[in-house]
Structure formats: C-alpha cells, structure tokens
Amino acid sequence: MGVRAPMRSVITGGPGAGKSSLLSALGAAGVATFPEVARTILQAPGGMALRAECPAKFAEAMIGAQRDSWDATGAGAVICDRGFPDIVGFLHLEGLPIPDELDRCCRKLRYDGPIFRAPPWRDIYVPDAQRIQNWQEAIASDAAICAAWRSFGYELIDLPRVPVPVRLAFVLNSLEMTDESDRL
Image (tube, rainbow, N blue to C red; front, side, top):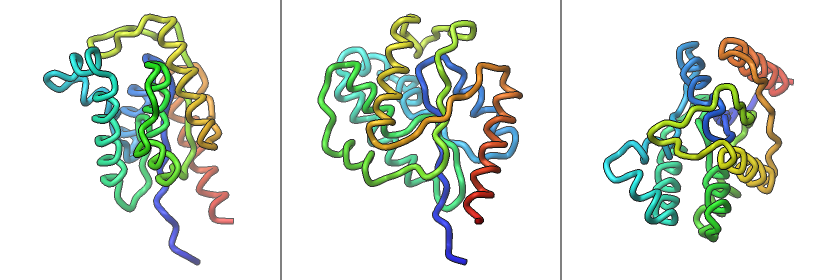
C-alpha cells in the first residue's frame, strides 16, 4: 500500500453562511482546521482599509496568507475555511484580473478532499465588523466563489441549512465515506 497524500478539504461559500461556526464545531470534535485568511487580514490593523482602498493589494495579501496556510497544513488531514479559488471569486466581483501566481496556485495546489459549500442562508446572515456585505452582495459573492471553484474543476457539496450539530454530522459522515472509498 502506497503513502497517501494529505487530505485537504475546504468549506467555502459566501459570507455569513455558517462556515466559521461549522469550522469551530469541527475543531471541537478533534478535526484539524485552518482559519479563513481573509478574516485574519481584515482583523489586523489596517486590514479593513486595505480591503476598501486597494482590493488588488488585499488579494495579494490573501494569496500570500493562503500559500502560508497551504504550507502549514503539514502531513495530516485538515479542513480549511476557504481556499485559493475563493480569492478568484473575490477578484471577479471586484472586476480585477487574476494574477498569474493565483492562477498557478489554483491549478497546481489542488485540494484533494471534499469541497463543502455553505449556501446563502438568510435566517443566519448577520453583518459584522469584517462582514460588510449586504444580503444581495452576499448572494453575489457566493455565486462568484462557486463559479471560480467549478472553473478549476472542483465539484461542490452543498451543506444542508440545518443547525451546526447536524451540519457537523453531515461533514463527518462525508469524510468517513471519502476515507472508505480511498481504501478500496
């Protein structure tokens, strides 16, 4: 039996769809997770201004941070809050070109686990200090992000709009099924 490469899964989707809550529950259940790089940048001093004043430089910062998170995931399985194609979706929304480096990352650094999509969910959507989009912008963000993932050949698995414990069970069950099929 050969050595299996690390499994990198992702939870993606528009803002306010329950990704962070699910990642927190996964972490509490003992699953290795990696936080969203964009939110980390936005929470840093000057992050919101960078996003507002120079979206291209904000995207560059996200690309670098996403590369760092890719390298930091190491040898074990991990579920990431967003991935490289999410940055492509952001750039499309901003009407900006896709840097060659980002395109290379999307084509060469492939996520090999399931890509879960948290669909827009009006009942739980709440703006906050970093989530500044209104509901219509959140829906547009989800559409751009999903289109980006699909353009790089990924299939998305929609998460059900259910409470976090049920979503957690859905993801854990999906990961077990992936592990079993990999052993065949």
